[in-house]
Image (cartoon, rainbow, N blue to C red; front, side, top):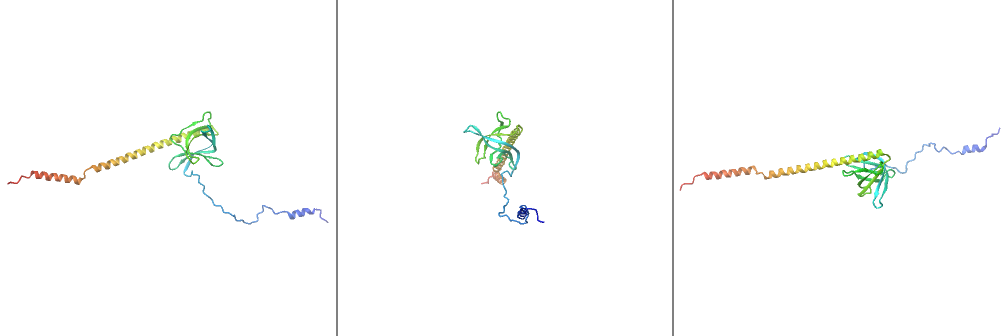
Length: 218
């Protein structure tokens, strides 16, 4: 009896391609071997004491207006050895630095007029590779984050002030100690040597004996 199945169905089954996802067991060696590269950020010797999302602005004196510097993470980084703290902010996508300066004892931060979510401060910034006096304004998503930033900012500035005072006191104490040592050395130089003193006494005794001797008779 002749088959009733169409002939083209058999052809399709015969011509059906092999499964592309089928594992053939073949191993292909990579053309280029990539090696791991250690990437440094410059923050390896620092500890983060603050990390918040925000948007940063700088005041353009020439245009008399605020200009956006970027949106990303603002950090307070404390150096493990020196104890100095700097503010660093990078743009979230490009990681470009938009703020980079030390938090100094003389610096203050205050709430931006009419906005509880933002604050302003002056700083000598190094984000562009050279020192520039900048007026910054930073805006957070919440009032709480802005308060946290301002409080931490002031605490760090105060701690740096105390550190500078202790440093000055230590330097003063060291100077006074050196002066005391130098004064002692000068006093030692001014003292008469013991041997010289004995010789002087001996000469005096000889003179006295000569004076006591009777004059010889004629």
